[in-house]
Image (cartoon, rainbow, N blue to C red; front, side, top):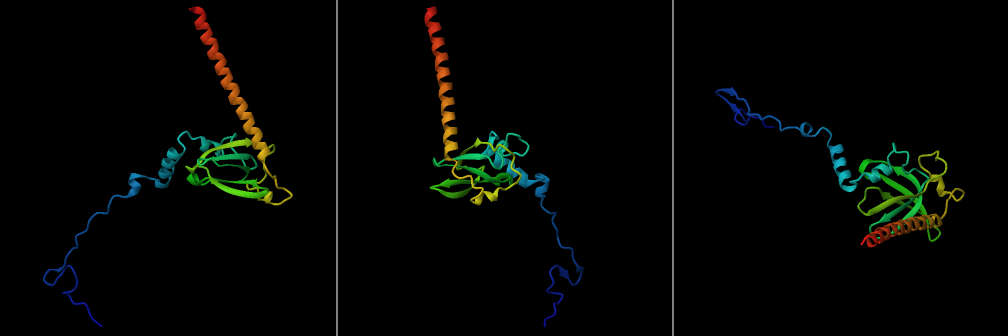
Length: 189
């Protein structure tokens, strides 16, 4: 067993005794610059991924027109794939907010999780709202054959037809108005 001699202790001078060790003040705290860094990071990411705030509004608890559990939602992806299904669960976790949709593909029940703010998601639309408010936060009972909604393909197809009709009527009304303006100009000359 070795005993530490006075010569091996750093900062010790046998003549003067113990000397003070030079100390430095601590670096400035990150809390002084940013009180809540997680919230700041979340808001920065939300402004990047959802600049208009449309998706945040669509899944906000305060919005009475928000998407709720039991609604039929259509998710459009950047690669062109669309998936429609009944919303079984909404998991609100800030930037990691996600929805669980249940639909049918080739007569087989399929559940898909989609991150709401994912850059791969092009858009989310509410196709049909549930008539009555769901009395559960998560509709996992839809997995049972007794409660299974089945394919929502016909509902989505009808919704898309209605949207196409509205768009074409809007285009026709624009064309009719532009023709009237042109005919008025021609009449004046």
